[in-house]
Length: 355
Image (cartoon, rainbow, N blue to C red):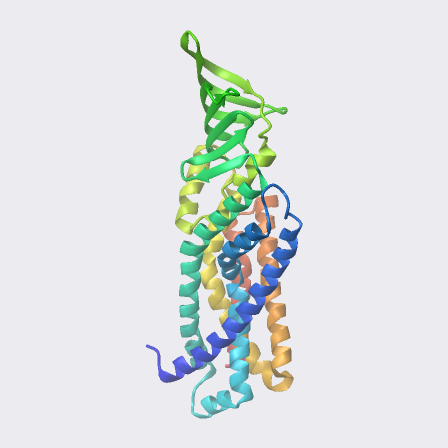
């Protein structure tokens, strides 16, 4: 149950968290803006398409920055209370540091709830729309991607691909060929397509040819298909972990295993999503002892600098252990939780020292 003091402290922390999150998101979007500007003029990718992409990327950026924003928001919020001697009054009234930490964690639970909602329901949809819109604008040959697969155009040929696996293998390929008068010449359906030496090799091909005598049907175990639509164009439509919720990631991992695909990248993303709420709680908890140890001696400026260094260290370690998973094959759950456990131990030890 939230007391009046809980609400007061929570409001202060949330105010600073919002300010920090706004600044961090603005910086990250500005860096992405500089990166995207160079693509303007490619295909149909213009200024409006870039703004749309950046806008749809906003939920992903917010979700990724929540732990650092929670750390800095907590440190700045408590620092403002300390500067106004409000923390001293709380301590003088008999409120222990652990009680203050418990009050702050109540606010953290609200932050965690918002982060989970954004990460599970908003980010996957927005990121999918962002990636689709960007790819379709950059590649003129890509006409549409919908829930019914990917549609592409190669001169007078239209291609539908149900799915592209991480090894760049196509599943359930349909090819529709037209002549210059827009009359259909042939329809081909293949179970799979594998790119090999500047051509696609289609497996279990069923082809219907429309000729003057009628329809001729051909069935081949394997057939070559030469097209300008190479993997470099199609790979932008690979399913990215950011486009999936935790439940969808779990199902997609099973699907990849059924198709003999590597799942480390997606398992890592799954465990990172599971650990994300705990990361916010750990960052909030980590900020509390640093405030009580440093704010009175160093001021708000040093607190902000220290918080930035802690947040960047955690961010760098999380990325570093992610690379270890992908490069050296360490278990994805270890890659996701090791930095978190290390910072949790630091937070608990420091909290015990100041309590």
